[in-house]
Length: 131
Image 1 (cartoon, rainbow, N blue to C red):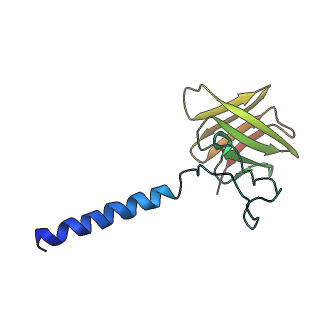
Image 2 (cartoon, rainbow, N blue to C red):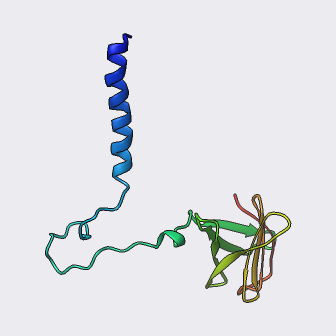
């Protein structure tokens, strides 16, 4: 390919990348829900705040047949745990190994696919794993 053709192609490639990024940036105008017309009184659609965004909940199955679910914040700052019909938002806590989330006597320890949950409704949840 000649140098004269490379430059326009490079410009198109970079322009395409930047255009793709621009679709993620917030708009400066007012927020309008999908399907609503500008100027209507419909409230804007709201999703979770970025710090509350989580991955898909993982189901942990324990050797004694108990189960619980945990979804981990994309920020790594907390986990949302559902066990025994109750839900808990547990902040990240220091640990020597694996990941630990704890608050108010409820504690989730994970290491790879293995987990243990204490202090939650129906606890203890021991010898648990995903998959």
